[in-house]
Amino acid sequence: MTLPLKSNFNILRIELMRKQISIAFCSLIITLISCLPVNAKTNNSTNRDHAMITSEKETYLLVHLAWLGAWQWEGVVSILKEKGHQVFAPDLPGHGSDKTSPAEITMDSYVKTLTDILDQQDQPVILVGHSFNGITVSRAAELRPNKVKGIVYLSAFLLPKGGSFIKAVQGVKGSIAVDNFFLSEDKSYALVKEDEIQNAFAHDISQEAFAAAKPNIVPEPAAPLMYELEITDDNFGQLPKYYIECTQDRAIPISVQRAMYSGKVNKRYSIDSSHTPNFSQPAKLASILLSIAKEVTKL
Image (cartoon, rainbow, N blue to C red; front, side):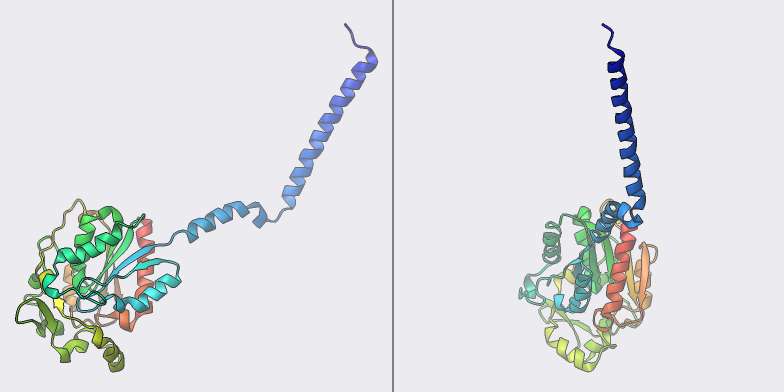
């Protein structure tokens, strides 16, 4: 059946109006978008980028040197936390608030303290070992390689498989710490002669500051010092490593530090300090740890 001419005309007119309305609506949308400021157009993208940046927070696990405790990290911890990072700084057995007898402590005791913390983390951490406890973090990293993002050695013992503190210090010249090191009569713990402790470890802080810290110094359990490092190329060997050398160190002379890390680290950093920049230059040390976090992220 053929529609009347008038009906055909009305249909065409309605279709034409629909097209005109559609074109006008699209033009309006385009006009509105073009009038928006650049920031508004990219707001969602910017927010996503900002979220990515602010979510890049690290977890640090800081391990103190022999004879001291978690308290040595207070200045560094406060700075890292101010930057939004998570920080763990435990007392190893026999140190700080842990009163375990030195005679009961082995390297396994130290390492378990660290692996217990590592096992609780959802993401890999930046593991930092100071001085003797470079050996301890190496062993912990060997046992939990998937929990470690990178290892940092702060004027620390970076030793090969089978190395130990006792073997590493044999024949070392120019170390006030080694020259004044001795074992207790029962061989259960080690000490450095009292009148040489500051000279050996912290000559660049005031006598008043050292006097305040001195009561917290404890005997160092002997068994971990004898431990021979167990590591493999498959685990420990695959992890990024960084060394922070202390150029005025009187405990581990700079020549010894460089001999230990040469050819074994991804990057080396320097601080013109004694063995304990955590006391004398905490801001500088924290800044380096933040830089290392950026370096590890690039890998």
